[in-house]
Image (tube, rainbow, N blue to C red; front, side, top):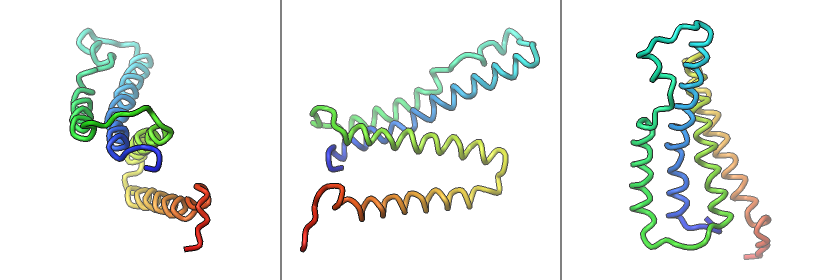
Length: 143
């Protein structure tokens, strides 16, 4: 939040629901196409299942639009490096959700250890950034 506003970062970070919905729908279509190419049987009523369904993205888009309306009242300004860094959250967490979903399909008993590892990594990275930020920002104060 050093180079962007909290409201802009909030809207950017809320994009994870759209990112996850788009990637999950793309993965569903790819899985369906792969499954059908191995069986070589496609029925007419199943042909719609092989298409990317934009209606599945509508709830996520409405949610982000709602966040944007609430958070961006009067917020303006040029894009900053902080805005770019904020995009790491929806991509990183979104990919984490998708990988966790795939792992839970294969090993449902791994939910607690995986969640604990994710929390520890985020806590450690946050603490490390907090401790190193004076060095990174050139603030060597002797308060």
